[in-house]
Image 1 (cartoon, rainbow, N blue to C red):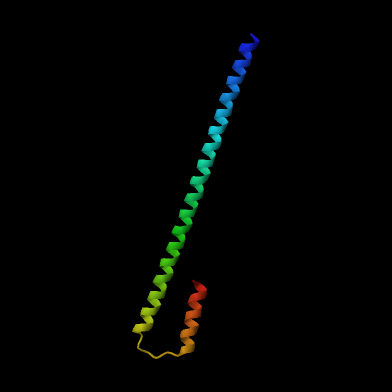
Image 2 (tube, rainbow, N blue to C red):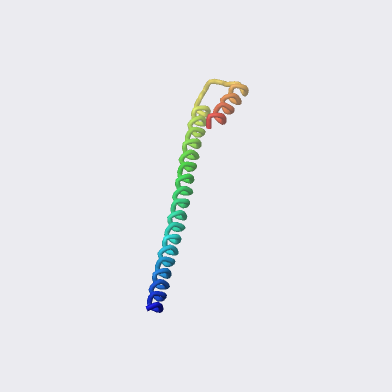
Amino acid sequence: MNRLRTRLTRAFLIEILGFVCFGIILSLLQLNATNQYKDITINMVNEYHLTSTAYGLISEYNEYALDSTPTSIAVDKASIETNEKTN
């Protein structure tokens, strides 16, 4: 009787240990997937910011290139600095 109880206790503990190890592995996989999703999201936001900034710069350049009125260097420099601070 004592030997049977020892074997059942050992089998029960082995099963519990297996479930705990499986849970730890699933938690690590979930953490890894969450970190990868976060990195992808950050990259997408940065790419969107980059494209919107590039679009703004291209628009400003096109306006400047097509503008026929003469401007001074100080006004151009102030405009560039303002755009750099906002972006």
